[in-house]
Length: 411
Ligand SMILES: *Cc1c(COP(=O)(O)O)cnc(C)c1O
Ligand SMILES: [Zn+2]
Image (cartoon, rainbow, N blue to C red):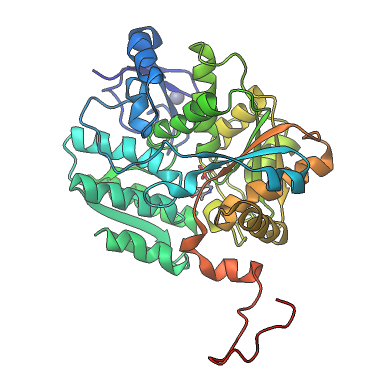
């Protein structure tokens, strides 16, 4: 028995028993009717408080609240550090902490989602899992699939960073490089998976893909109950929406008294969620999930280079419910944020991740975040998978010959 009570359509409100639908609400075309997983909180209350009394080793500490029925696939996702970040805070004019998701087993926050989805896939007897990805979800699904002895097929835009194309193959996955952008890869993955009976982890359309991401919110509630702001990058919007769901569930369960405000950060080349939240006035006015935007992504922050976000509605509602806001940052600001995070706190984050640092700066300039507020920056993914883009943010190597000639005098 899992704690899942029902799946509720975000669009029309219809509710389904957990076994009755696999992906989206059948009342709408395509993937428009995203389903939200609803839980029976009373049934898990006792088991959960016992779990919360102990240490948080990994995300399975929160198993009473996860849609998995025992025997989870373990690779070590979750249980990440919350680092005090005084130097970063000084630079930004806030009291900063960094939630270091770069230490997840495959290098990003996607491991929280994959742990849950692959556990479910194995339980339900699927042999093949698939997803479309900008890179990190691919590596993550592939790593977890290897661990669970499932075959894995990945659809990615052909131009993704080299290491992100190598990592899933090393885990034994087949990587299909699609001649197109992430939206093209998403659609191809959807149709091929349906045809061939592969279990599809695609963001948003698989209702369980976001559920593991609630554990980030659970951990933040426990580690930073006093936070004023949680700052996260947004691509599809699943990560922020998932973290918010976890935070609000822990408020409802009485673990925390207040929830923080969420600040969602997008890159100037891919602003669809920002546009809907800020320009078009927030969550409730938002109808479908996948409103097509022609302004196809173009940013160095490839993990948030999403022109057609599949969880825009959920993300907007999370921003609104938390009293939060959204900002947009340029690639140049992202590079500066990447270097600042590395220099000030020793965290090497990829550009999408560094967008959160740049976002704090932008929100301070706009007066959204006040001086001295308690801000948690979520470092969503490691920079080691994309050293080519980080190269633009660093100084040149100093060339020195073996005798030491060339060594700068002022060093
Ligand atoms: C996927 C990803 C994001 C964005 O998450 P969404 O759920 O798509 O909004 C941000 N940073 C990194 C490192 C990611 O891999
Ligand atoms: Zn519906």
